[in-house]
Image 1 (cartoon, rainbow, N blue to C red):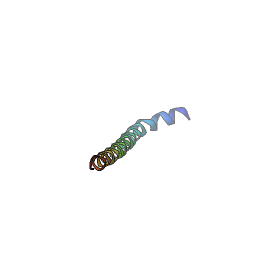
Image 2 (image 1 turned 90 degrees about the vertical axis):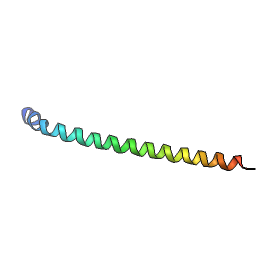
Image 3 (image 1 turned 180 degrees about the horizontal axis):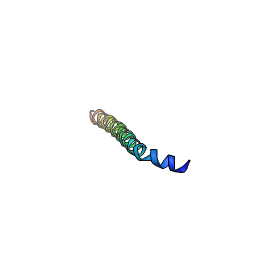
Length: 52
């Protein structure tokens, strides 16, 4: 059982790494987008409140 897992792990490791990198990039992109939207909202609010 153990050697079988290690043998298939060679190709599986690259696949997992690739998926992990993709997932990581997606999470970062989402976080950046959310942050950008929040900053835009804050800017918008500041602009509105600065007007008399």
